[in-house]
Length: 340
Image (cartoon, rainbow, N blue to C red; front, side, top):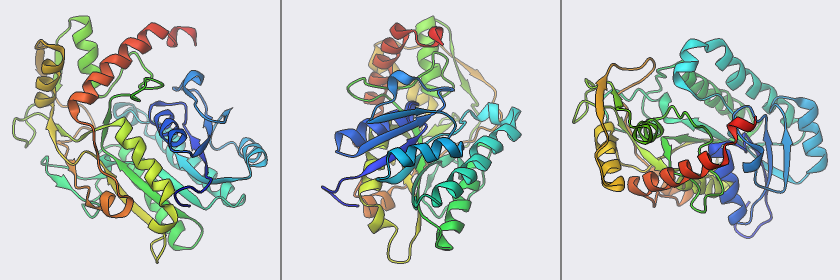
């Protein structure tokens, strides 16, 4: 697959936050999109593309229908997953079933339909990330939660299958997405976000204090450190992975793992300061204990993304905050959760 070549991608979880933004970026770049989503957390309104199918990504009859109706699908972008770290700690069996077992079932079935290109939504949470330092793709894989373990497991499965000649795969290791699609076509689809910027926005809007969860991490100010990447930059990385897939996975490298982050670290306290600069006032802040499954964090070393994909982040944390605020207003006005 290359520039100017007709490409059609199947995006699992394509109605959710990441998947729908990836779909928007694909469409803008001339890549045709078919979306598959159960709508357990995503919304039909944000399923962009040529066709939408509602259902489970491991439903083999549905997968057959999709490939019967779109035999020109050339790559699967697998975004569908359960993603909330504390929930994974409370229900590890559910997370292993949905994120790992169903992925195996999907990939095995799609191989029979000739689907051998997979772009997998992985996570930087698989890294040890003990001290807020930079991590490259060779860093130790030590998942700190069942959620992170599911991502590491799927990566290993795809790598083993790729080296056995059964498929080719690119795992994009996401750091911490923020923001929304710049034209406000899609964004985070919950009124009660669990990630740090979402919680900060919710606290600020309600007048409640924002809790810094963990203040004794080995970082420069004691709060956790994250690499906040604008979701549009993240989506662009998928487009580059699709366009360069055959080159990146060629020459004896049927499996690649690539960090996708801004390449800089921002502590939670620094995020609060950036937020205050954007909104023009300092939010209330209180200190709290660490959450189960949390870590000090780290930031992405992104040399491989530039070398292999020709990609680097372009949007900063302030833009991510502005877009998150704008999307929060838009999503609240839509009141889609109440209509479920």
